[in-house]
Image (cartoon, rainbow, N blue to C red):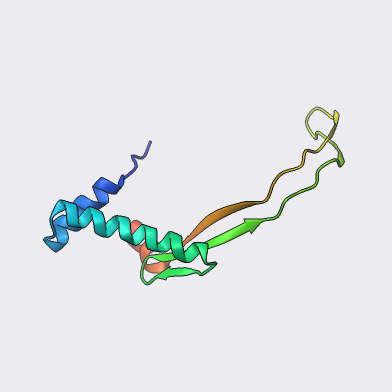
Length: 102
């Protein structure tokens, strides 16, 4: 199972590579992702050259109440309504995926 990186792990790397203090690096990492979130909230696509692009995808609400049949059990059921939802999508750039393949 793959391990996951935390903000602290990313900040440690930034501090090591740039010579910033750990506190400054953590602030920089946090500010970067807050900036991405603010731009996505404004419905803007955020492209980081060499890394990839973040975009917002809105899935509309569904009404439900439709009659359907479960394909496995063949039992009839009525679909439920779902509220609209917003998802963040990340599409990795070619350079980023090429670097991961090494």
